[in-house]
Image 1 (cartoon, rainbow over the protein chains, first blue to last red):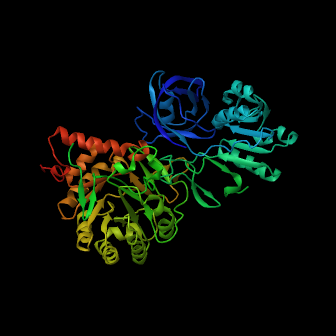
Image 2 (image 1 turned 135 degrees about the vertical axis):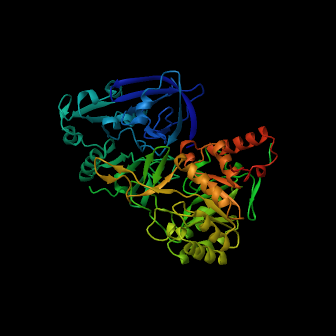
Length: 258
Length: 304
């Protein structure tokens, strides 16, 4: 897919939670096609101590409104600066980058999308694309606490939503892999995005149950286009770039101890 | 429109803007963003005799005005390059230059010999300055004897333009440059990355898998300009300058210090189209200052 460097206009930059911002961007001409699971490298303007762009996964693409959304966790100076950008300003992005999640082979496939923390971000657009095929995905979303479960209204519109929280303030108490739904429904496929320990336990569950599973990684990266070879992950075929060969990998291709 | 063409030995560049090895892949990674043929040259990823997996992750950490990397020359080896990558890049109408690295003199020689056979590769950049490999690499670039030995050996088998990439991690870069010149190099490129380190103070461990890495980006630019200036006073062969160039202004500093051409590296990560902007900016500056040619400012610096 052709990649673009674009100056996009900020339609809205809201804070659904003190630790996150939801950035909605647009441009006058039509946005390029983007696949669920792909990401953008966002330039951080006006931040004193950062240098590189920040890779942020595509949260949602609304082609009717010509908007692309990014759900950003404010983890450091770069992302905090991004959260301060006002409506009407422009943000320079390179997109779409990476491979994206595997498309559904049939609307009959029962697919489970597992997200943890800000890792839920790409699952919204993925869920939308699955929905467009006439299928209904199941979401299993986990977070520390109820207030960390973001965009739930949107997820409910697209499929069935189950939640877990570590403190029990919403859904079942515990981690996503402890949720009772996993014992009730036999899924054909699982796609996961979230903190690495979460993805490893999802991968472990999927492998034990013999379910096809892919995970979206977020290794530290510089270029975003497969040039610098900084963001590599160990695979059955040696080091591969998360930015170009991923971020989505089938768990069978990774050398995780699961 | 000023004349931007320059020569590096017998190598003719349509303009002096090239890309630095390890920051631009094999060029193809950037073809959505720029017309590659507008560049003076593309120096592709470091190539070694045998396949190298490189160092473990994490390989990169952001630093003030730059970054550290310890990729460690990950590449599939010279045979793979010749059989699979060369056919894909040989018809790009610019100078496709291969950065050659090795662990032993024999490795360098064998790799250079293979590249010498490739019709559409007009030059190599001999990397005697990679700080991220255990043996070879920078070890050759930090002594006059080591640098001479490897350059002499490669010179015997490599018939086209031989550029030697120098390490800044030395006491006297000018004396290394002189040794390299005396050993038959057509040009020197400088600087490679400066060795650095960042520590995670909570875990009390280094941020990189092999503890240290090479610092690049604008943080190192003043060091690079100073070294180009020192080397320019010491050698007659043309100099390719690099180190933290982000825009045309930065590039012009290098020309004035004595570089005949420049390479852009880390800036490609921030703006994948930066090279073309730098080329245009150099031309605009020359036009606005009444210069007919880039050669008007190569080494034009008047020292205080």
